[in-house]
Image (cartoon, rainbow, N blue to C red; front, side, top):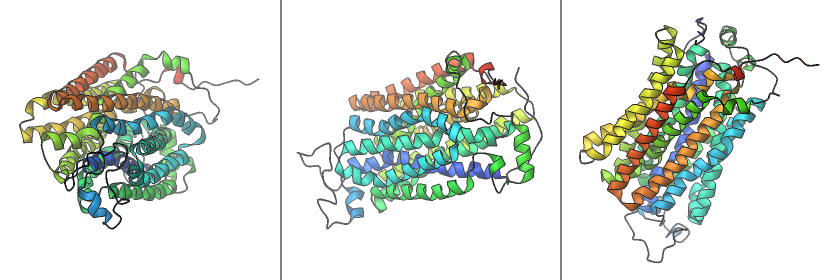
Length: 478
């Protein structure tokens, strides 16, 4: 049986906890723009139109650049000239390298955030990612190996920032508002993807592709100031929270242990099928999402044959839908729970099913409608839009089954997701390098198959009640 959360209501949308959700939204927006920026910039970096590549060009370094032509304005140079001879395989490694970095820090940062507090760890990760973004154009001129190293380091910084957010929500989000608050914060990733894909091409043409990294790296630094000012680990320690809101949050949450010295029941976690159901959902969800985030501009440019400006605008539309569906899905999920229309486990499985099955159907149909511009665009919009309904499903399921270890388990969950991202990015680069038409078809078929597998596993073993090993136990010290 699912435990019914308390129904007492506290301050609403003007409350501090919703302010925290907005700040997290902006931070996630900033990080995803820094992550996806390369996907739109690389079209200009390797597919320029003003100057052909020399025959003896090296794939490691620039073909030409401001260092070789200091008299030319940087905006003029980078806006149209092909400066790097990076093959599709090399681009696939570049896209997946940030996932390697995130994977390295997800699990340890989730555990450490639960011990030392998430505010400083997340803020430091956001700042480091922003500074590394500012360094990316210089690294590109020095060689592709350095870009890969920068992206790995940036991934490590973002891994610190992504995971610890659930440590904060474990103390700030009342049970009946979890879907709303996490969806508001999480929708920043989709909106950020939309923003960078929409304006990235415009920035590249107007100012030069390096300014994609300069602008959004600078935005990240500004978000850091907002983060350290507004975010606190615990509502009882925030200097600006009202007494009414503080009492509402504290009374609606189960009491959590206050001692930072706690053991993690790794053996019990490894034997827990509901956790493996969550992990399989993350793996499936991130497989298709990573393909879309990293290769959507390339797909739109190569299949629909549009310019970099139009490619960016078209590529942004799916993520506008994704951001909207994330917020609306969270509102609908909490509405169903607050009115006792569905059980918690039913809500989680319903939104997981919608978020995995609907984009799979659209992905399978996509290769067969490539000749229709409008239908292709509609399906590309529906895939990430429906996929983000998972944010009210298994994405926040760790808060239900093990709130004490939510941040640690989110790190493991995202680790599975990033592992899927690494494999899917590399596999996509390999498949489309063999043959474009059949390669894209195989990419979408494979993604749909992975989604269906994850859905079946989650529907079979997914749960929403607190597991026995995650319940607080009173320890007697001798």
